[in-house]
Image 1 (cartoon, rainbow, N blue to C red):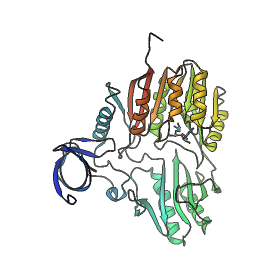
Image 2: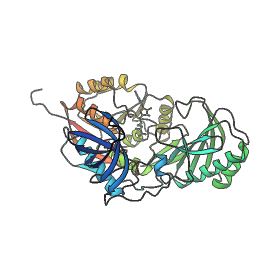
Image 3: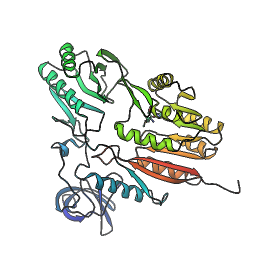
Image 4: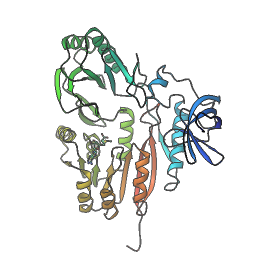
Length: 429
Ligand SMILES: C[S@@+](CC[C@H](N)C(=O)[O-])C[C@H]1O[C@@H](n2cnc3c(N)ncnc32)[C@H](O)[C@@H]1O
């Protein structure tokens, strides 16, 4: 029985999941919440072959880079898994981890981009509600951690959180499951996700009005499923129906259902960096969401073809196009796996921009790119694991010229990558 064996280990490096790795007597040990160089004491939790998961008991020799987490719920909530490291060090560790993880595909410098804010940067947070309890959940659990603040959320989000907390405490609540708050500039959208219409909504609307005057909108989303937070079943209650703002010269509209990047400052940095790679030619964009990046690119490109599967996001993108008079932007609603292969075969020398979900891009798209005339790929990825799988399939025809990472979620180990790949020229073709 090797379970419960306590051992002393030195942390050698951080792996792509943000866990510390130790190599000892031919085995690999993996521990959460540690830094390279630290000596720790832990207990083996699970062991398979040459690999064991360690539960951290004690840090015997802490790293000098370790800092005291600023949030008192940090350990129980689990949302900010990298709050015990300062920003410079966190980004340096992310860079080294990426360099190692992609060493077979790229040996150049990995450029790092800071977040303009390391706290109060999140423009949207979903809180969990059960009766009179409201908060965030413990990592990999449904247990509610009752908080009074969340340091990564914008201040207005916390203000709404406190108003809704006092509303559910004063009113009998058996129907509300989530509160979803989004803030852009100083405008706020408040969504109560519920099974039925909650009681005394006028009271809540009045409290929100006292705090934010005309700058908020209140919505209900009816959802009985626990598989996802928001359903398609919306009811507008009062206030602003959408948030209107601008980014990089584009006027955009955020409705409560619209997908928007969580960190406005880093979103703009990523879009500006993509724009540097756009010339006056054709752009084919996959996974285009509500179309903000498409619109930014359309200001420079000759023509942008943007493909998005979600109908509502596609309608938002059409509105964005009309309001910004972008006649060179074509929004196509459908599956990238079907539409992108047709587009890449139609245009010579197109620049191909993709920002897929965590699952990465479909094999059909990769096969189409490999046989197409695409010369340059700009790949934005929120998941290094699927990014690596996709790069592996493209590596015989495309080489990486730039690898950049953006600290889109400070205080966590998440890494947003932007990779530029160019077709390897073959003189015999
Ligand atoms: C990471 S978001 C990118 C959004 C956008 N680029 C932005 O910055 O706001 C990924 C988008 O891909 C869309 N999507 C997921 N699978 C898709 C598919 N098979 N075909 C087309 N779009 C898809 C999702 O609906 C979502 O809007």
